[in-house]
Length: 103
Image (cartoon, rainbow, N blue to C red; front, side, top):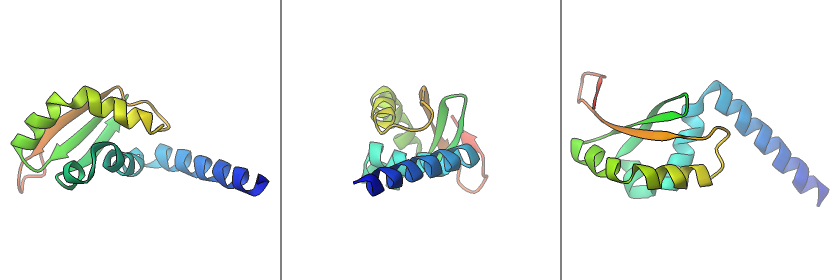
């Protein structure tokens, strides 16, 4: 049993290390769990800074629809115990071919 506790500790330390070096990687995985497969297939985590996560959507329709669910999705994401609390999720439509986000 002690071996499993050690493995859990190692996994948590590694998760926290990855979070510090690249919060987007950790958040993308948690985002897929919190949002579900359909939403995750049409979105991606762009940035995370000061508790605000920016999620890029494939269409303006997705961005508008998800804005209505932002509070619920934030609660579900935080329930998955990220190393840092997500205070707000902002959804943007990724303009095709420009590399710039529109709100």
